[in-house]
Image (cartoon, rainbow, N blue to C red; front, side, top):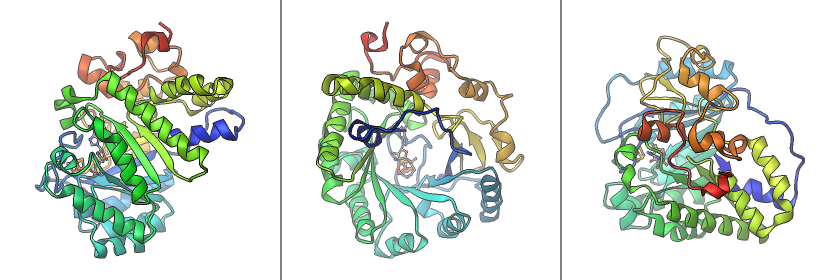
Length: 379
Ligand SMILES: C[S@@+](CC[C@H](N)C(=O)[O-])C[C@H]1O[C@@H](n2cnc3c(N)ncnc32)[C@H](O)[C@@H]1O
Ligand code: SF4
């Protein structure tokens, strides 16, 4: 994840660059259920409206949670499928909060009526991310349900009214790239404090539909729009957060943006980008799926490194006998092609290995989703 607003605050009030600080344990994104009331075109978990066999029981979830706590995992992101379809979701969330995890909910928002909003508020979720992939019919087409947009916006409103910290998440493809400004405007109009811009990753239905990924030009335009919008908020002193995900080239591209606007800040931002360190899959981000399989991150459901029913997460995660995990944990990663030659490798860490593997079959090949020019990467 690239924290755009945080980097922009470095332009205004720089803090000294230091060594990279890794959190004690990884952030765990936990897909507690695969069932979903939607069937989005890009969905990495290939979720749909049916039951999936073999999902972890409440007691199994609790046992894993104890292990995660002992392993010093700081953050649990409860996700799915649609996590609000799990009958015990609030029991699980309550326990996560009681154990002291920063507890987030990742939801499509369609099921959040006033009663559900009251329950979410009562649990005290630290953050709720709701996906909006376009305005009106664009979102409904992308998410394969008429009325989904209105229901999700109603869910956002219900939470904002109750002062729950909400973020709006937008995954961009050619289907919705033109609506980025309107979706950002919607977030602002609805009083949503955080905007998460996600690039498409090539997993699940997102891989099947990868030909609809945003073009390089559309991506570059979108990033400039995002940077300019985020900067206008910083300049006006408004507390709004912009972050991006699934493309660590955003860091180096932000450096180009800084170079063209505030050239005297380039050296500082370059040092801060190296401190950030780019892609964190298999290192600071982990995934447990609905049946307890552990993956280097959510986009790696085609690669399992263990199952929490057979072996504790705390045992699975540090084990580098898996060659993918060994490579992800190496510094620098054994990337090839443009990524190996890139002057920004220390900042981006070779970007998204899933896309490389899906497109070329070689997990260490250059990321085909990198939208920087040869000149920008120093070739
Ligand atoms: C799998 S969903 C689960 C939570 C909930 N059902 C939702 O849609 O928000 C979690 C997030 O991953 C995003 N996502 C799913 N597949 C993706 C892909 N292939 N690339 C990038 N983001 C993806 C979704 O848009 C959503 O914001
Ligand atoms: S992205 Fe979320 S809402 Fe869409 S099908 Fe997947 S799990 Fe469901």
